[in-house]
Image (cartoon, rainbow, N blue to C red; front, side):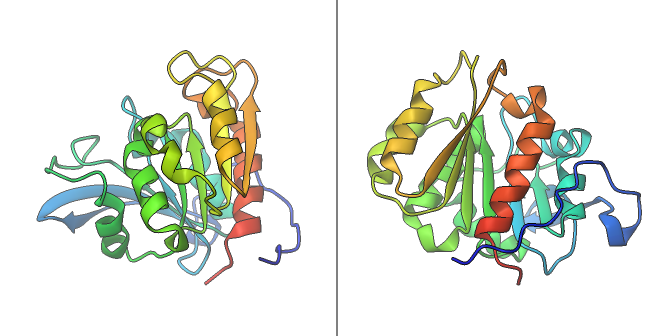
Length: 220
C-alpha cells in the first residue's frame, strides 16, 4: 500500500466547529437496543473505530482528546459505548461476531480498529476472521490475546502494538509474542505507563496513531 505524503500531525484539540471536528454524540439502534457513540471528523475520511476498556466508555476518548486529534487530521473517528457500558443498553452478544454485525450498523467499512484491554475480546476474533475488512489494528494490552495468538500467526493485517512498560495486568512480554506472530506488526512501548497506557502518554500515543492511520488507510 502506497503511503500518503506525510503531513503535519495536529495534537491540539480543534475549535468547536464542524469543519475542524466537532464531536457529535448520538444513538443508533443495535439489536433493538440503544448503542451510544461519539463521532468526529469528515465522513469521507479514513475510519477509526475506538473501543474501550472495562473501566471506561466513549467519553474517555473525548476527554483524552483522541476524537479531536483524529478529526483534525482528516479522519472519521467513531467511539462507541460497548453494550452495557456508558449510555449503551446491555444486550446478549457473541464477542466473535460483534464487530461483524456492528460495522454495517455504523455504516463504516475497513476501519482501523483501536482495541484497548476489554476491546480485544471483540476485536481479535474479527481481525482473525476478516483480515481484509480491517485497514489496520491497534491493540493496547488487549484481553484475550493468549487464546487468539495461535490464529494470528502469519497475519498480514497492519498492526501497531501499544503497551505500557509498567502494565501489571497484561505482561509486556505479550507485545513481543504478538509482534513475532505478525508479518506486518510494530511495537510502541510507552515507558512508565500502566495498563491503560494511552492515559499516561497521550501525546506520544496520538502521534503514533495518526501516523499509522495515514500509512494504512486510504481516504474513501
